[in-house]
Image 1 (tube, rainbow, N blue to C red):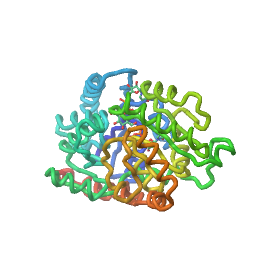
Image 2: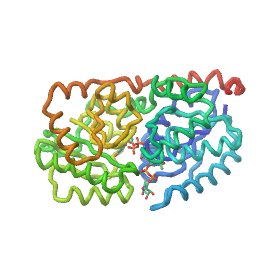
Image 3: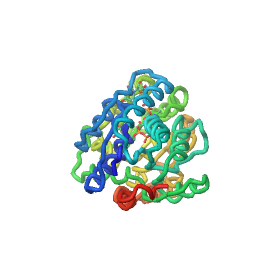
Image 4: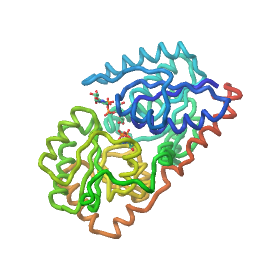
Length: 369
Ligand code: UD1
Ligand code: UDP
């Protein structure tokens, strides 16, 4: 079976490369990797970490590019690439514009599609934007759906999707490549003795006043509580950078830095008191590690983490985030609920499960409906 795996952004690489490593153990698969370059250096850094080179590369990232322009350029690229390779199966992950364009292009050519991390939903097409629309569409186009949880499976089945398999999230598998008991925090001893807060933001629908007010809440916390020290690896999006630099100007107990390597990020996360984030994947990793998540968003497609008690959906209101965090940080009972490790998003063996499902299909492509 000739498989083309498409990867465009940092989280797609983190969640697909462990699967590619697993697929490559079997001679039944010929695996080709395409990097669309929707992200620049932060994507390359993940390929380097896993010591994998893409077979095909494109440079889709352009500063300030609109979503329509990104979409048309990616569609053109995948149109030509799929003609050149003619894969039996396209492997796409999640909800990015890369995954959406590759899937649409494959569908037009009658190429079968497997969707990894299928069935995530907020049912709000504007949040996360444009990811919610992307994932709904990719699931409609896909022939095989690898759902991370039972909840995602039930959503897909309600939508009438067939060939749905619950396998866990491959992002949890990635943690086994990075966690290091001997890791030393890259901050001074004085800072390392404080309680570490990890901060990340990038969502398009939050850029502007929502992102500003959630970051201001983190600033208020740092000003009020000198026993906390924050690490904020800033996403390369210039809109995020401008906000981060202006909000934290003059604040001493924060380290604002370039995006961290996956190794550093996972190991700092594992040692953090809490994470403030609007990310998708970090919700899963933190739940698995038992690190409290203060989710700077209005919606989540990862309800499992709220049910397990790891994630608090605190929104983007400055006062609410500040008050909620301070209250929870003083309550051992609340903290211990948020700190219990959850396997809701997977047990770290999702890649093996996907490969076991694909192996018999590789003998006879026709069984993929
Ligand atoms: C993208 C995905 C999002 C995913 C996220 C993970 C889309 C539309 N968005 O969002 O689904 O959750 O990645 O991080 O598919 N930029 C750089 N260098 C980079 C990356 C971005 O300069 O390496 C700048 C560019 O100006 C770019 C802007 O940031 O135009 C936005 O980047 P984009 O990839 O569209 O959005 P993300 O927020 O990263
Ligand atoms: N991550 C990283 N370095 C950083 C920030 C995040 O390696 O400085 C990793 C993180 O561990 C997670 C992924 O990037 O696996 C999340 O990416 P992002 O929040 O950009 O995307 P999302 O998950 O929201 O799609």
